[in-house]
Image (cartoon, rainbow over all chains, first blue to last red; front, side, top):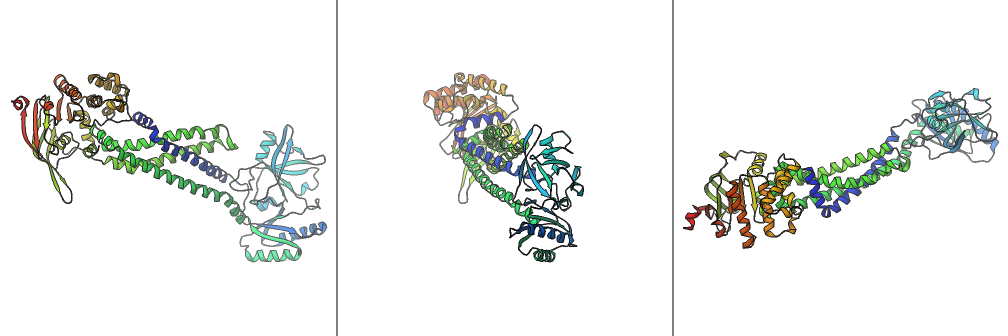
Length: 393
Length: 230
């Protein structure tokens, strides 16, 4: 019977062409949207490598050009922040703190590996405690690095793999310029701070040494507050800090708010695409339903004939559902030819698993849609009384 | 072979009640070639549909090979139609998107028959009706007579014991009509197939063994053809 259905649909290919084309495009749109969703979902399920709970973000910007004054104010501010009983830990950083709309990158070379692109995070020793970062190999920054010959860095595993491969990275020196070399002192398994929906990139932490570096102003200050710290503490802290830094602009937010705001960058287009896709699916469903309904009315006599020569009502129902599935299969096969190029040619450098999963899910949804649309008209077809149907022609 | 007892068929709408068959009693024996005649609307086709288990009588009993079919499920009725009965219609009822041989194979699709066996039996049936050279053609490439021969081949492919033909020569000219009648007569005489044929053509009817006449849903005459000719 399956062969018969394929033969029947193949012989009707001209009349089914538009429907097959519609399914082909629907499959491709579904594939694209599902790839996007699955890609983001896959990233979302990966570990971030830090904890953002009860972490507050302060944005600091001086409004004077006096470097010496600003450095002094900066020192006072971090000391004051750490002295609040509500604060557990605090650390200066660059503006590229987790979930910020800011990135810093640098190229690194080691032996034959040239210009490995990496995210750079300038942080103080306490950053590990603020963000709950766990070091899997080596160690985090500490006072022992004050007298270090080389700038200590802690790298993530991704950078380790890209730069050192299977070699042990601890103690390795990476030349940056003629006078600077980085020394790898530790490795963290993960650090994925840009967005929950972004993939992990190669990254390293570079130590801020306020004693040594007398020229830099750090825009970011992240603090880990104790449970119960709320608006009252925020007001108190800002008031106190404003007293120290009269001519600075201070903004306070939480990492949770930043996370939500950053998530919208991905979720809003995802929802919009899903809605558009949903409307498309509804259109295809109506098309399928209409064509099947029309087909059944057009093929009334054929239904009567099939009943006369031995088809039961169940077989009639199955035949019409089967025909829709065969039409869907033709559309899917065409779509598959195109969609399969994405994993095979590694388009957009996405994992091929995501593409294959999207292909599978899109095919499943198309078949499900075909079955749902076919059930009612097919049931109606199966209820046609053979004598009446044969009389129709 | 086919027994109809007190068959009544009434079509009812909200305002009108039409009696299509009124207390029809009929027994068709194995190997008979029976023709049914009567004016349009007298209930001939309705009777054929009831015999072919395509329609249910309002009252009365239908039995095939002595077995009443009233309590049969839809699938059991379908199986009976598939295995015991072959249909030939005035308007052929061929599927235009299928080739001649695929059309002939249709009844075998509803049985557990392998694809190769289906093809073999379809080709044999086409040979019987003299259409071996047209197996790959499509119905719209055939003449009316050829189409009707395909329809007969389709009825034969399932090797049925009974063929029910509803005005099989109605759409054909006299020459083609004769050809179709010859095929039916040969089937009846050489293979012993029981045939019940509805016709408007007295000449065709006179070639059969038995002639039943209907008028206003009632059986008004039932006679052997020799007697009828006398």
